[in-house]
Image (tube, helix red, strand yellow):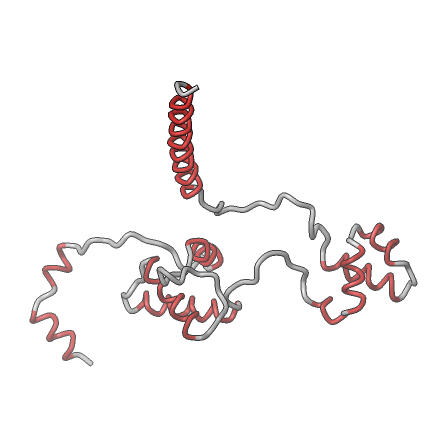
Length: 197
């Protein structure tokens, strides 16, 4: 019996070592997996339009249809019809799924205008500077967000979504200065430039 005990202990150590290496591999694999950038819906939730919803509520209120019957006719969940029947003021908003955006459309337009003004002043922002600027703006104005507080940056997903929503702003590689511009950048041309008002 005493001869088998060391074998069990050795097997236990082998198992512990194997478990640690598996844990390391799993951790590496999970940390390398990012959220998909181009998400496509996989459910049929919210497969009805705002017009269908309004027609269903109208049929319930005006035509006297039962909620269950209207739900089957317009292919809308009963619970949704009950909610909108009790709160008709929400009908004017289009139904949405998912997380609320960090910025309103007006705020994003202001940010877009600011970035374009900076670009006209020859001060383009790198993606990292833009993410830092957005994070500071959000923190200064106490806007709820899910950005990385440790790094002090807005996320990649926000940046990619923002660039997709604002096609006027593009990522470009800076160009080198041409020899003609270097040659013309001297004291005389600068004095001429600043003396002409």
